[in-house]
Image: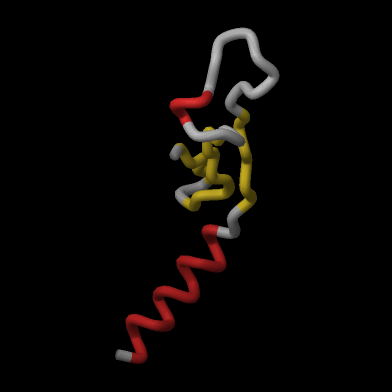
Length: 56
């Protein structure tokens, strides 16, 4: 997993995925791995976590 950061806050997570068990992945088939990019609101997450810490 990798993440992209802007202005100190994560904005996206990147995952490598495949649609078969790794042992069934064969060369030159149509089942190559894919990259999935998931947007993430790191600024809102940081604000939420700061609020949670203050409440404890």
